[in-house]
Image 1: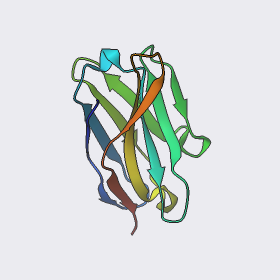
Image 2: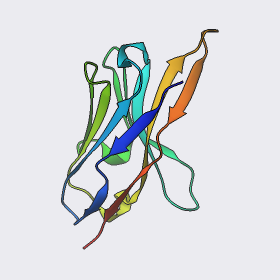
Image 3: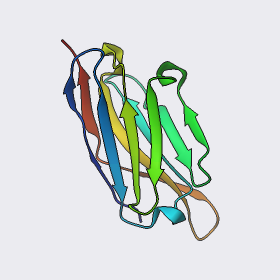
Length: 120
């Protein structure tokens, strides 16, 4: 089992910045991928950004050039630096980790979610 604790959401004006943090209850060296998804009411949860244990990163097209994901494996933490925020970035952001189980299958773990609201 992996427990994920998120922090850093809140209200910010358009053009502003926020940094989300997510700390895992196990060594992040054992986690294949850590990342962030977001969801708005009535829509599916979508990938925002992810980073693998080999530092390979993936971003949604809508956030490329504005958001940066990073991992600190000593602190078992993944960060999402969000700059130039837009109202359409408003959503609940969920931390995600993917870890291989004993059978070699990837298992998803989720944080509780943190609200990000971009509004003037």
